[in-house]
Image 1 (cartoon, rainbow, N blue to C red):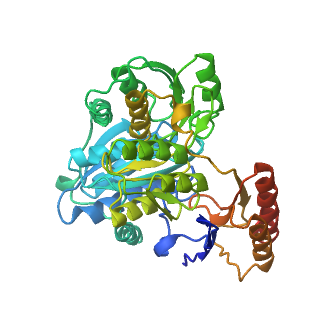
Image 2 (cartoon, one colour):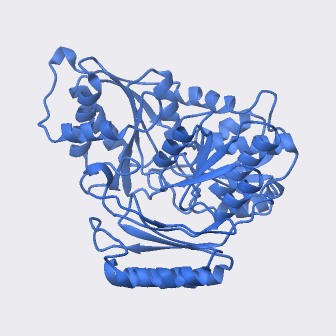
Image 3 (cartoon, one colour):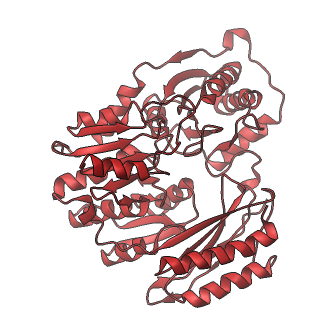
Length: 476
């Protein structure tokens, strides 16, 4: 399967116009693994108990190397997590793996605990910011980072073989880790510099009825903040429903109502975060990245460069440039951000969605750790959140999703001249003051059409124009 991207760059007045069109098929000839594990609707293959059983077995076989492997399993709060946890546990046991069950825990907690337990891998049962009817699995290696492509391919190859259970005396055992939450809470608190506390801050936390519900409030309270909690009563069905980082409107109202200093919203599995200032204005991942990076520059901490994605706001790039900080873009997906950070030797990167990686503190995107970095800036600088973001001017963006007839299609300029014509027309009108981006989603059968420019009304019209062109050739 191909993964071809067409990119056009023009450097006029230091502002880039970028067009990216690519394949909708999964990378590296993978059948199941996407850019962030395996995800889909519960009950629809492969998000079924029988597949998860086989997946656990295949994972155990690949990671055993002839010895007993140790695998951690964590999950978010959606109701199907119980079913898939049992299936994965059974499959891993059948392959002879030792299983440590963590229960509901944020995704970055599994990455951290995989390292501290010296485990061979960590598995997260989650569909992140998706509704309860979806679920999936993410994997971490023994280093707390996403599995390498070659390991995912090995697991997929093992899935093609018949399940064979090891001898009875070699079956794996499973046990629950009772102090998992406490271990991770202490780790999060250690991400704040010694001597910094949050006394005097009133914060509203929205835990999205997800995996941070029993973690985040304790972290911020133990650091001294007055915490008002929302989204901390999960029932298995309400995860991400009208709450969390994807729908922060209720948080904005709560911050104003409670006259809080800031609001913090996580997604269902806790690897993303957005924040709200005292005026109720939302800060997305780009603004959070800017606040962290600019503080590091001004306090003499290492910050040579920042990795964003093709979706990162142009304002982030220009704001960092004024600080003398290099900026580079990669494809959407935290694994690509991480890869670019490692290649460059840079410590900061992230996505507009709020997936922020502070590589000097942790190995993956961590919503709690990222929010703590911003709160630390507020505590050390004495500035309000609205003041900290003021130096970065965001360019208006409009994103339109076009649902596709089917997932396995390709899209290129050559194949669809009407789409190419619409894109070029918009680019000509924007000139050097904006960008057009078309990209396939890594988790859904949609093409994402994004237009960025100086006036929102204008970019909204442009985005809808291109979306209509896309819809006529590949839309439902």
